[in-house]
Amino acid sequence: MADLIVTAGNVLAGTNAVTKSVTWGETITAGLAVYKDATSGRYKKASTASAALAAIEGISLNGGANGQPGTIVTSGNLNPGATVSVGTVYVASDTVGNIATSADNSTGDYRTIIGIGTTASNIAVNIQAGGVAIPA
Image (tube, rainbow, N blue to C red; front, side):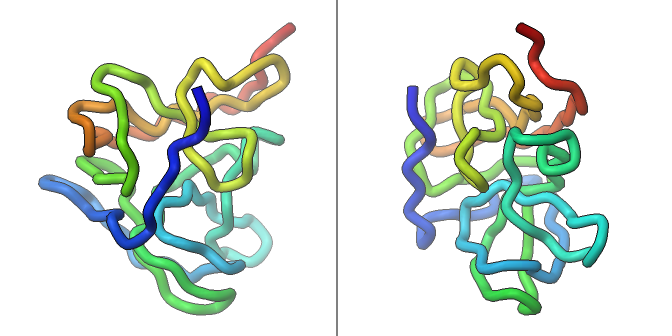
């Protein structure tokens, strides 16, 4: 399967969503997985390239440029602005900021579970960053 195809204008916090106000560290659009940069303290697009980049803290609800305020969903229900599959585990993608299915992770990727699809338009967000790469 491929990365979720997100329509930024359709990304919405769902019932019981826990949100957090942040400051963007680069240009962000709604629906991206983000992590907190240790140097700047700002939020940037996550990836599977390293444990630090895969330490996802949430999914962006809005976009903005470097230095602008943003909001992320850290747990609870999220309409990711894309069609999801019920029961599918969603993770950080190899493509910076994107969300993919767990089947898309491969050897060397630092896997972070974002959540599980509960309806065609909802992911129950429960972020789990393993901090280790998938072995060969």
